[in-house]
Amino acid sequence: MDLRFSQQDEIFRREVDDWMADNLVGEFACLRHRGGPGDDSALIDERKAWEQHLGKNGWTCVGWPTEHGGRGLSLMQQVIFHEEYARAGGPGRLGHMGEGLLGPTIIAFGSEQQKKTFLPGIAAGKELWCQGYSEPNAGSDLANVQTRAELVGDQWVISGQKVWTSWAEWCDWGFVICRTEAGSQRHHGLSYLLVPMRQDGIEIRPIVQITGDAEFSEVFYDNAHTHRDNVVGEVGEGWKVAMGTLAFERGASTLGQQQHFVQELDAVIRAAEKNGRANDPVVRQHLADAWIGLSIMRFNTLRMLSGNEKGELGREALIYKLYWATWHRELGRLAMDVMGADAELTGEDGELTMLQKLFLFTRSDTIYAGTNQIQRNIIAERALGLPREVRPE
Image (tube, rainbow, N blue to C red; front, top):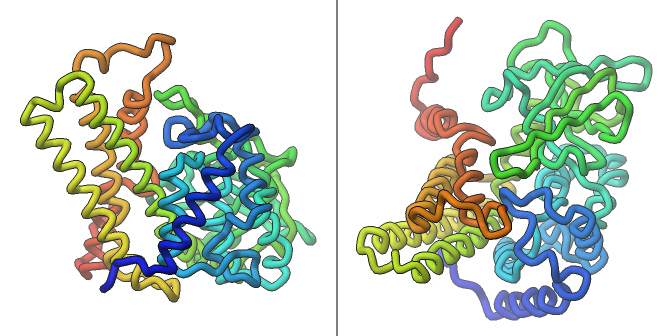
């Protein structure tokens, strides 16, 4: 496995660097390093404008095929784009769900009409999407979905509740897993519906987190509607399509996420150098361990993606979420150790500092998108072939 970048790749890296330097200025200068975890509700209007600016200049959907509005970049060039975007301080992407999850799902499973209808708005940065998977009793256990949809005439009528829906209050559409077969259980009888979010039958209640941010929401569907043609795949095949979406979640954009981790670790190191904790040999060892862990994460991810040119991930992809979530949580704890007693105090403006937000938000990393316990079960059962965990009757 050769993880080196070619000369052509390095030329492309300079192209990305130059474009970011020329465009994160003026009205967009305020967006540098904003909109990440714990800061996701910041500067929404400006970030919406930035999404459209990216789309206008061909910097959305860089890995999509050109016939669907993308650039058709190689895997290595996608890695470069996401790394350099993060390194330049590009803001948190409001278009991530559409570009990284829903778009590839429609390309893989959707009808030709769905491709024509939905992909252009995503590529242009004009339509934002959210993901309607988790429910109060179906978080890590997605097969326990109870939100129902019934076909009435040419409309699906949807009733139920979703929770932990990122960016729901700012999005135009949602991709929602619903139970469309009465009496069905577990992964049977589910369908993958595309639902307009701005309608009277949908109520969105933001959930304020301990960071003071409200990136997640509860979403209540009370006879909400979507057209019968807005089913991705066949009716009743929602589980297969949903699993396809989750596979796309472990794409090249994960390297951008890791570049954000690099910047967070750098901030922790700068704090340690400023207050003298970097001279403590125990703290220095923990900082070194964090750097080593992040390096391992990057190489494992490149190895994982190297077998994904055809959209197929190997078993090693199953360790990814467990690894990064645990590493990131420990980085938040390390940030508090470095700050010492100052970790108990807010900033001069009464607001939480970046490192305090890092600590508080990373408490959730090992819970959302599948808890660490669930991730270990998945590794045991799907990767190692061990017997399924005994479930209560």
